[in-house]
Length: 307
Image 1 (cartoon, rainbow, N blue to C red):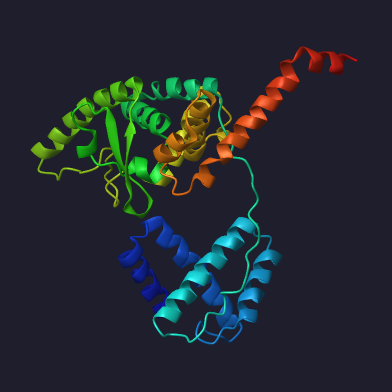
Image 2: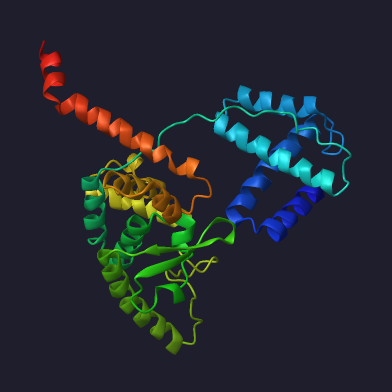
């Protein structure tokens, strides 16, 4: 079964240019399914629809969320589609199985005051203040995914750019405009970064192609390290750390744009969403905020509460 998984992942990488994180997620879910099948004395080649359904029932019994179960079923369906196309199987035992409905939970968002506090706190982070300020300003100015942010190339940031070229999911590229504060933070950070790189060059050390370089194996700041960093910034800003993740800043970017009159199609392009239905969730967030605003501040609502 390991051979099946490896062949499937190689095909995904070659044909669909699947992102590394996507491939890792597929690999994890399929190995869990393989282990479950082994316990049942079964194999990918012999598993039936009943086995796939039994696996999903077991996942539900473990208390896994509908989103996790839906993701695992998606990986299984794609594996068997690949197996059918490659003549590894004559059928697809997962083709008729419908996954659990995903909950339409609204994304957590930050207020504009909270984002301002985070940006101010990043400027007061000691030795790495310029880098951290640049990270936070770019994230809020562009709504990038965290992987897109930490893997930004150095060449894309040269020359005081008005637009930033971002390589997103599936290798798709998009142009996103930079705000003046983001450009200023980028210019300041680049000057310091160039000094550090020059010192490395003099010592004979290799130059990094990444904007946010690191001495680690990846060669750039990792997603995990940035996740920890943003929590540290939240503590300094007196914003509850549980509210602050790289993705909540992405949500804040979209919601604040929409609240200030931006077009939904423009936001879809800036975020790199393939389907506008994904972007439409921000209209629901805005609807909730407007409803709360009316219920809190409208004079008739106040009078009703007093009565």
